[in-house]
Amino acid sequence: MILKKISPWLLLALGACECADDSCQRVETNMSAVAPGTAADFEQNVPNTVYFSFNRANITESGAKIIENQARFLKTYASTTATLEGNCDERGSREFNFALGEKRANAVKTHLEKNGVASDRLSTVSYGKDKPKNPGAQTEKAHAENRRAVTVIN
Image (tube, rainbow, N blue to C red; front, top):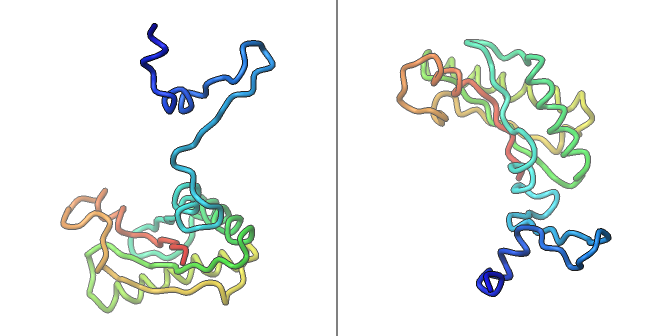
């Protein structure tokens, strides 16, 4: 019989039933479950990156929605802290990009605070152009990927 050859783990992963009639309760398994409120939970369930226009540090409408989701998570898990990492593309001087990265991180911090997250739970750091998401590429797409602020749960 074919069923004898199917692994019990596979049946669980497929949501096998424990009974034969319509009152059956599905057995759900999530092999990648993470503990609520952890960095892994945040990374898996909340967008962590806000993108910026060239030489800008203003929060766009789409960025504000991302920050609202981040604030909801941080308010749910009140003991959680976060670091906001400001990043730039490779154009411009080192000093200019560090300053711009700081402005971007602080812009996200300000919006998180406006959404009810206490400032003492948030820290900022600027990496300028030192931690590109898309290194070495000289395209506008690559530059756009590097102009960002990333929220990292501590």
